[in-house]
Length: 84
Image 1 (cartoon, rainbow, N blue to C red):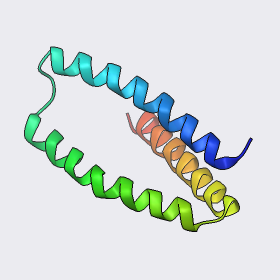
Image 2 (tube, rainbow, N blue to C red):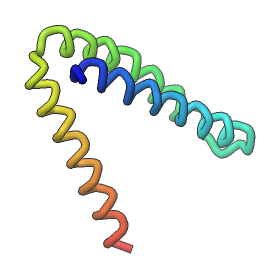
Image 3 (cartoon, rainbow, N blue to C red):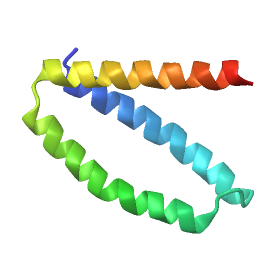
């Protein structure tokens, strides 16, 4: 499967799950609105940079970057689990 399709599919699934989570948190007033809006505003230019990077990088480079993101996320999760 091409890496661009893989990344796109992953983002679509993540967006669906995140939307459900955000809706639940908003409904129970667990979201501080000002910080959330600041993060959302920062995500807009970040998404544009991601599009430019994906157009200019090779499939191999994208695979390596995705691999590192997944590994670092796993390390962070285990760090949090073991720190408690």
